[in-house]
Image (cartoon, rainbow, N blue to C red; front, side, top):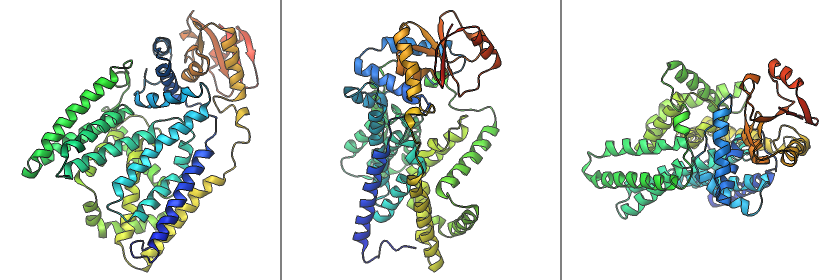
Length: 479
């Protein structure tokens, strides 16, 4: 394989990788466009951020409760964890509806993820390997596509991994333990207020504390760990007290105990996604590379296990187990915190293996992966996003929003399949209803998105209503 450690031009290689990584990050930043797809989680974050900016939660709370109670289908929790909206609220100092500013702010926050990866692996891999690992993720089509959305997945993964890193440091350091555990407490509180699944860090820390408490040299660490967990819970409670309460854990099924089918389905699903992520090649290349890696894994498995700390093993087991029993699937985004460890294991397998064929296999893997990833930069972009109805802030969508803002009352309720997006762009409360029987007297308008398939009953029902607005992609009916 490439001998990073003994290469005569090691520093030049590191400089080249560092510059390449900087260029990739800058390129990703400027490739962000001002449109957003219909995944309306972004609008929930932005409405919460807007309420923080204005200091008025009443209108938001009214529409959120209305949406939860009156929608035919569940539309997320009433509120997402509040740290991300707090950070996004700074964007409202510069704009109120320019999605580009918020997307770029979200991208800057995602850099915490790459920072955490660098800190975690810098002392167990040569820096050049670490830079390659980060480069492989930063150029991935998955992360490139993710930079076009306002979501917490990458940022929250960074905070979660930083909390894991800080706990590892706190347990190992003999001096200033209290300071390290204080940092861990703060990062834990930030993590659980960024993404709900980050509560797994409390379980990881608790299990880790139980395993080390019988070591005489670790009694001090156990005391500080318990104290830091309690302090983190206090910080979490204080932070949450400043904002409306989320019902995410109350009204959302986090864990499914109903059938082992969920676990088996998720195991197959995520294995397939991870293989496609790490090996985005042809089936023949994948068979050869995976066969080689599995064969070498048996030879170097002990060295690999020794490279990962006990705390990280607990974390990987707990985090993977949580998502095996979690009954919802939304792609590989749920596994972002463990993605760097997959690359670590792949690098270690090649690194510990010797021979010309092994070096060739690693060179081939690196070259092929970067070639496939960099190819995502030359894919033809959408020619005119302003006119593409697949985006929630297209020209056609804005026409519908403007009509609603100019011709309806703030107290009017609009029926739409993306109620949170409609609320953000129009300041009108909205619900998601597909069946006429669910409509009530308080539902004033039905906004039809022509690219969607509606039930025959709803289509028939709307033909009897007055169409008050129409363009190429939207029609608005007065109910």
